Length: 219
Image (cartoon, rainbow, N blue to C red; front, side):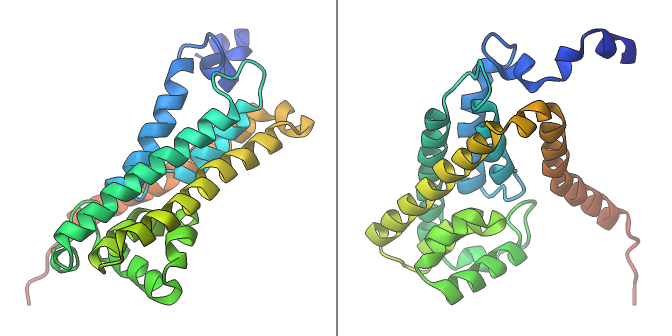
């Protein structure tokens, strides 16, 4: 395995796989759209939306990128808006029952509580600011719907936040990707981002496994 990698160092280059003609080139844009929608609309707060958009922007700055930065950013924003509408609808329909239910695998009471506290402190601004805060991004639309926020108000603020997050973060990655030093170390940077993105999932799984193995004490 090691000798094969040394003989073909290009396999470590993300553009080898994701660039024009790469095996997974056609999967980059659909992958961004799907992950952003699932994170913002389907209660999966541990998905790496921020790092995904930043990395997509980095890749868009490289020669042979499969999609432009504007296509990636625009589709990410549209997907975040669609996910937000679904979250709002769920909150509107389910309402306070969401806060009374037992913990599910992904819909944790503590996530709802922290997002609700954020919402109480910042009000309507939360719809915009929340897009830039991991767990809050996932649950703010639900809380907005459950709290009875008028839909036109939610939609307006959600569109602003989604555009700022989806397009803005992708552009940040893109402009950094044009820096020669970043371009020269793209493989290492993407590897570090991938590891950091996987850490929350690994920690969550490890915690769940340890809790299951913990012996039940009887008073």
